[in-house]
Length: 231
Ligand code: NAP
Image: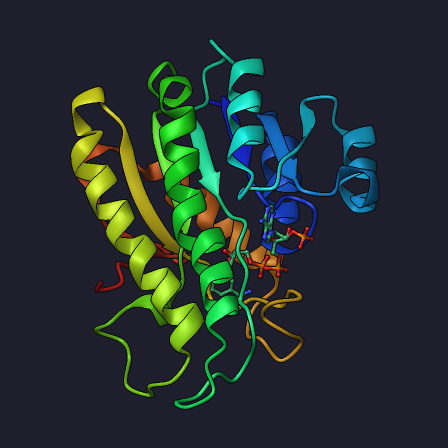
């Protein structure tokens, strides 16, 4: 059964591949990106799939987010996928933390996914599947942290995991499932060329996880291969 999926950060990397695979499967895809005029790959995908609709959205621009919700009022969204993410400076070690960058990363990776959920909750509640997913990262798992460092990105993903858990509890009454995802170490601009898997492989797995999501599986953190990751 297909439906409607909304994807943030859809102009490159994992988000773009998500658009490709869901559109190819016949889903209605609401693809959001912050610089639509320059999203050339996404725009050419639009030429291939009329079921792909493009929207300009910087996920940290909450006024614009509200305006988009108004434009989409009454439109059911089966899966709201918060994919957009920002790594910030690489190799951040103790004693070398840029506080302004830290705030920027928290805004994109932690606050924005929460605001997306709050802003589009009625669309999700009106759908058949009722799923909200957040692209987290295994490096946000406290249980998995044995190497330290990475203060900025790690903390933004740990924090968004808590957002996921609370949303899963608060929105269960409305029949909405909320999960966190780890895409694997993926060859994208963020993951770099030395990463372990392609975006195609990651998204093929994530798609299965998304389509298997229901209330009993809500409030958990899943790897792209379907395995559960400890918080
Ligand atoms: P990527 O290649 O760096 O792409 C990031 C995407 O997020 C881009 O489309 C970017 O848009 C968008 N974005 C960033 N800030 C935004 C904002 N304020 N508003 C709207 N869009 C924004 O990263 P990726 O590898 O595809 O990662 C996708 C998600 O998976 C992220 O949440 C990331 O943290 C997570 N993740 C990735 C890996 C990995 O190995 N690649 C591992 C674990 C988790 P612009 O082009 O406009 O910058």
